[in-house]
Amino acid sequence: MPFHTFKALKKITAKPDRELLQACKDEEFDQLFPASISALSLCHWSPVNVCRTAAQFLVTAPGTRVLDIGCGPGKFCVIGATSTAGHFTGVEQRKRLVRTASELVERHRIPRVEFQHGNINQVQFREFDAFYLFNPFQENVMPALRIDYDVELEPKLYTDYTAHVQQQLMRMPMATRVASYCGDDSEIPSCYACEKTAFTGKLKLWVKKHPAPAYATAAESYAQDNGRAIPLGTGPLALA
Ligand SMILES: C[S@@+](CC[C@H](N)C(=O)[O-])C[C@H]1O[C@@H](n2cnc3c(N)ncnc32)[C@H](O)[C@@H]1O
Image 1 (tube, rainbow, N blue to C red):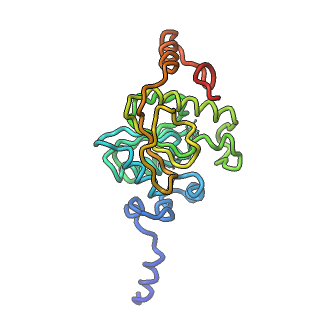
Image 2: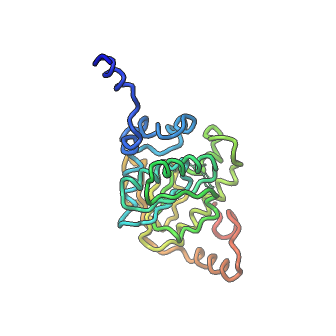
């Protein structure tokens, strides 16, 4: 093959996957996903550099257990696990996104990552040390953001899921860390304070600085004593 042809071929040949996993550019990293899922990246998946910085905000020791609340195809978890010593779990309500995320991790044997198909309202936050969220529930109130028709969307779900995350975060131990990207931070309880920002204030690190308000602990023990959960979005913890 003439040298110039070889050079031209090299230019258009895609980078090997192991290089894409370390990529700093989203248009490179996103090639790891099927085209239909990478097409959603700009609007729905966190940028690579945001994932790396957020993971560094959250992982304070080897093995820190991080939960991505609504993980999509796993971009934050995969980048977190390949750039820190934390353990990353993603929970996602859409089966096809969980399948894509799991295939990526299996194909590259990426350690310290797992994905669960399910709804965040079934997850016990106490099993984790730190949390990441990028506008997980916005689709329910902004129809233009709808990813697909695989799940039910409605404004009431936004209120219910936000209340669930708020309640769970309230009950976490002092010094618990949460990183939020974009959004209005309505999931973050007032006992957390914003300690650091990056990306012109769009990425925030929150740390639990104050005990949960008395009504939150009273509601928790009421639920435990009665062997049932408090209905979401109702009762003393409902959002105004
Ligand atoms: C904006 S995307 C963010 C994805 C990923 N965290 C990231 O930063 O790249 C929000 C994701 O949350 C998921 N989601 C929304 N509500 C959920 C719920 N109640 N339980 C689990 N996943 C949910 C959506 O399906 C969507 O994939």
